[in-house]
Image (cartoon, rainbow, N blue to C red; front, side, top):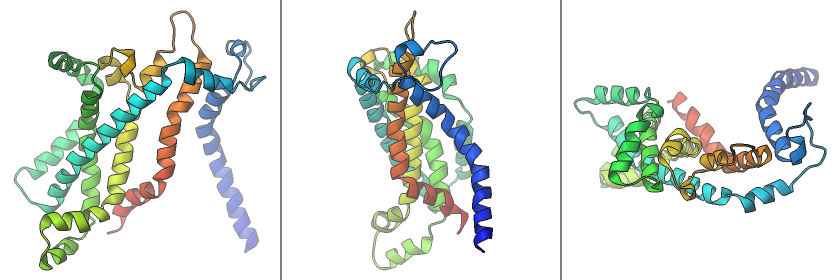
Amino acid sequence: MKNSKLTKTIICWAVLLPVMVTVLFPFIVTLFTALKPRKELTQIPPNFLPSEFMWGNFIEVWNKTNIVESLINSFFISTAATLIAIVVAAPCAYAMTRFDFKGKSFYRFFLLVTQMLSPIVLVLGLFRLMVYLGVVDSLGFLAVIYAAFNVAFCVWMLQSYFETIPKDLEESAWIEGASRFRSLLTIFLPLAIPAITIVAMFTFVNSWNEFIIAFSTLRDSSSFTIQLGIIEMTGYYSIRWDYIMVSVIIATIPVAILFSWLQKHLIGGLTSGSVK
């Protein structure tokens, strides 16, 4: 029995180890590049390991660049876009699972079609709209744009989960005298927390990593997101690869913390719809 278990463990690790190495390799290269002395960044042939670990590169990037301001801007935009998307998508998904109305099938098809449009196709129109409204470099308006691009995905995800919540629970509350709104707040929404959490997480990550729209609509460096802040470190005559890699690591940390914190809800939200 023990030999069988040990054999299965060895086989599993033999299969998983190449996957782990493939996934982690870019992060390892990024970390070692961030810690290299500047003279070794353009060395030929290149060294995989730095001769000296320059941990001071992180302090330099933090103090000499606009990385902190860019992080704050990205955090504000991503959080605002997530809240807007959830507030709009949750009632829509609830209505699609609990009410029958004309055009319901067409609306579902419409949401599906909107997911086929790439944001880059609409960049020019969005920029002209922002110029007309005078909201270029507006972080709040950019958050609204990000929320708009994520609403359809949120509705699809929430709708599939809401359908797994029995209507009998709400009907029991109605029999006890609770209104629809009260049953929604006290019974339905607590059961929907896993789905709302996973949708919020994906919306936050999508907004955090978005580059094309931010690059096209933000002009002032004080309003740059973390993605634009990293691009700003590329000069015309030289590129500080150590600074860029340090910034990439710093930009990855908030998302990694978010995934670790919401890991249980992520697994529950993805698998809850599989069993009804």
